[in-house]
Image (cartoon, rainbow, N blue to C red; front, side):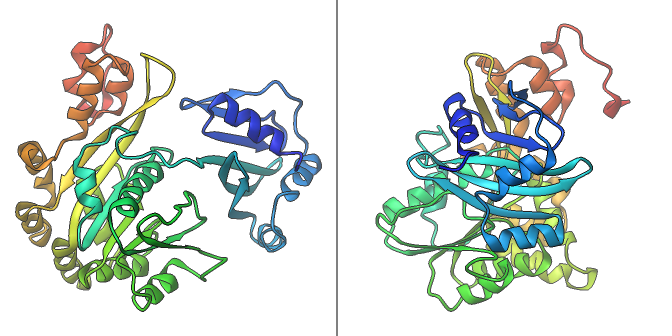
Length: 360
């Protein structure tokens, strides 16, 4: 057993989501969204490097020493998988470990809307799960893919950096490909995917122009494509995708996106006040004809209005989702206010409303 595994077991037992090991600092965990120091000695650079390198593949050590950062995955059998990032900082090396549970939570476990089951059964199109880092995008996406795995008889191909949730084949054939290990890049894997007879393609993240373009192309040519983006709302997700491209091709991309987009799920996590843990607030945009027209006509600023009037299709705004959690006593008024879009909706819930500089 590697020496560092003791930290992972402690982290797992406490229910922490992340472990931070940094030269010149005590170990720190993220528990229910907040950082907490572990009662342990200060880690020095050489000592920490020895700890980190014990679990690092030889090629990844070489990559880290050449570039100053590296990503890979690590697994402790019968415990959990970990998404790993090493980086150099002023005091020396550092590592961040995100726990990926071995058990994949289902749509019902996570109490996600039943609409998500419909998304898993779509014959083709593009479904995006977005939100800031650490907002639970991978968990939501894993639940949707899990539903497809249980209820379809298709080929699911995942392209990730690194592989996070491992889906065992149930009713589907599943192939996991890791960027840097099984394939050179997201774009090369996506190019190859079109010749590998997949029905569902899960792209870990749409990071660059070519990956986005290939994902849209795959969705247009009869595949169901799932992916993630680091954006904070449905309308900003669409703007981000289009703005990646040069101006002279944005019209073409807008047209392709309008035809292929089936849904955007934007989520944020909140610390629960009713019990330990966190709760997700979801903004849901469904690609109904009105949404497709707005994308095609470059009127994405009107998408929020469509979300407000699209409840019968399963749509909901982020603020409505936050308000529901607040009224159910699950999250605090201050947290709701801080993460809301239209803050005026939440000022009356605060005993001492702060001066909102964004509205000044």
